[in-house]
Amino acid sequence: MLTLANALNSLGVTDNTLSEEEKSFLDKNGYLPFECLMTEEEMIAFRNRLAELSKEEGSDAGKEVHKEEGTMRLSNLINKDPIFEKCINHPRVLAAVGHVLGNFKLSSLNSRAALPGEGRQALHIDYDDKVKFKAGDYRVCNSIWLLDDFTVENGATRIVPGTHLSRNSPKKDLDDTMVDHPNQIQFLAKAGTVVVLNSHTWHSGMTNKTDVPRRAMHSYFCRVDQEQQLNQKKYINKATLDRLSPESKVILDVV
Ligand SMILES: O=C(O)CCC(=O)C(=O)O
Image (cartoon, rainbow, N blue to C red; front, side, top):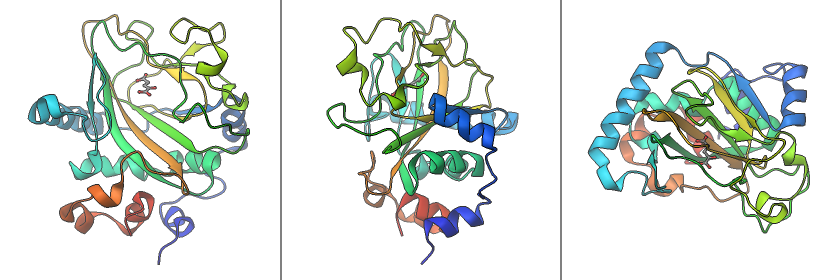
């Protein structure tokens, strides 16, 4: 049976996929951007397909994982079009996720568009606040695939760099998780960028003050011993299983 190490190897992940500078940046700050990971054509295809799915699913959209007021969310994307397979097997992204988590699998593949005037969230981590974790003992890691430029005006994700080392969650440490944090930065980048975010780093969406949605996909991973956000074995359909590469099956944990 193909192991994760073999699957990553065959997808081109090596010890040198990330430079030492990139690994140090991720270790220190809890996030790592990769510019130009999607082509213009790929982004057009992703945007168009997500728009079609939103229309088809209507008020059901997002229901497999999470619905959120003021946003358009879609979930279970791996079953909804072959184009989304790219989001779970890019070597640079997988190298960064592996650097954070060690052995991992996909937790879920979703999209989130913050609608005009909406999208502000409380600072959070993507893990149970009640569970103490040690720096280095990470359970979850996200990758955000930017389908629009992330700007101050459209509410680019805020991140508090280095907070993955703090062992606490915003809920425990802060009186008010909605207000600006003195150390937060906004992740400003061009569409086509992917940012890998150690999900124990405090972060949140901000208000989109423009009149168009801010669109992104979240390819979210968890350590191999953790429960997936979407149970891939349960949700995977036959057509998807038949078309997926052996490497993607390992990453989804559906072998
Ligand atoms: O869309 C964003 O800027 C971040 C979203 C996020 O952190 C979440 O949905 O948990």
